Amino acid sequence: MPPEGPVPRALAALGSGQPQVAVDLLAPIMEAPELNEPNMIDVRARLCSLYAQALLQAGDAKQASLWVRKALRAASTMKDEDGLKEVRALQGQIVGALADAEAARRRAVERKHIAETSLEDLLATATSPEERASILAKKASSLAGTGAQAHAADLYDQSMKIADQHSILREQVFARLGMAAVHPDAAVWVQQAQQLAEAASEYTLLSTIAREADRLGVSLPAIDGPSGLQELE
Image (cartoon, rainbow, N blue to C red; front, top):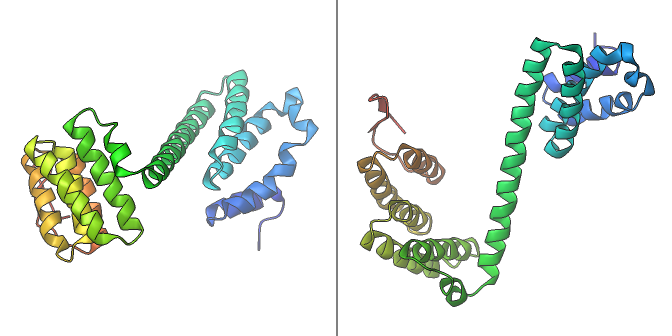
């Protein structure tokens, strides 16, 4: 028997991976004036938290941040420590989602700028070998996205040479991963990237390499993780 009432139905929708349905069910309730009555503060705290959760899962972290703050105010008024702990945990998730969205927006702006700006103009802004290598790799990635594989490979190669000459590990790795994406022998480049990162014990880079290897269908040998255990990527 399906749940009756908008709140039980919203909970069921969240549980079944339908957050937008939950948002739509809860939205009219959140506008109800009686929720602002002093004797409804406990209900208000719980509903605001539930609505914030639904909004977050539906991809609207900005609105979720508004409602989680209302939940925090209500829970603080009640001095509900357990409730506060739960709402603060939800707020942490929302803050993380907002940070991810802002980072994605900045990356999109940067990709658009790189795509629309000539390589010469981009390189004119470089003040170090690291910046020059990074610009070459990013422009190569932009070109690869348009299907200009040969031109992209040339720029990745230039980036790689600068990074190798100056021992710039991050750019050494990313140039090789970029080359793997445009070169028929992807495994050679991915394995080179892995060897460089493993030699430097850069496990964050190794995780990135493992994800890219998986995307490209490249099998990698086992590596020693930071705990000393063998990890098969």
